[in-house]
Image (tube, rainbow, N blue to C red; front, side, top):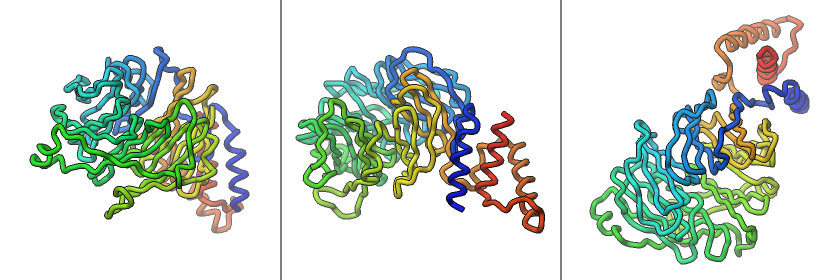
Length: 402
């Protein structure tokens, strides 16, 4: 039965090229992003309605339903953005050594964070949204009060050269930074943080430099990266890490323990060893169960525990170089070298409760056909197929009538 279902899914993936249907996903929107051409990263807003396109001299907000640019912020060169947990504020790094905080309702800059001496590459909010972290190629990570932009403390490490990605652990008591070392190797660093909600600890931390520790990713540092460009990325919850170099992606799971492990409270272990080698980029779903891996013009979505290929997303004619996944994990945006953006609809677990992809009228049709299937079990000649295959047939019928 499993072989029959896999054969059926393979046939279905090629039936209708316009809809880009492949197993449990499809391209629902495709458009060409207007110049300028430089795009560094893609980020969905917390409600999933807008896609923030960072890069060049501004941040553009694209409507996730129409592809229209609805807002453009003059934020300078911005490699990435971060949204506060409430969605009311956004932080942007800049090449001029500053970072800016923006009010999402008025789309105005409310604070400029000045403290780094070189370009700022990464930003992140604490779980309660009260603290913003900024990472620079000057080798320092700085913590700021999100309410007014006050510098709280500076984090450093002797072998830390700069952060590509920052993330607070779920407890908020530690900060993780992935990036490069002074020897040119990719790595992961952690800092134990004071309770910045207490005035006394803020006073003690003010102006102080807190040292961090580097986590061991490979026994004996056996994995040495020699590529000119190393990219690292932390998942939004700080539990997964990807390191890309020389056309390979290495994935790690990060655990935070109640007691110290080695030099600190976090440890990292490789995942999907041997299954994520021939990819150039990785992004994790918010719940950590799926990882999207770029292989030139396609995106493969795999299970982070087993490595099982869930589905393949197609729609690009040139190499993909940036991905974004919505906070609810149901949408994936990708952009290629021609600035073509594809929005893919994703359903991680195919159950009746997940079928929000279908139009209401089509859901009613599905319900009626399911009733017919139920009657078929009482003697009708209709085949008794698994529910998942019936739903696949129904979606194919919908695609054929679009």
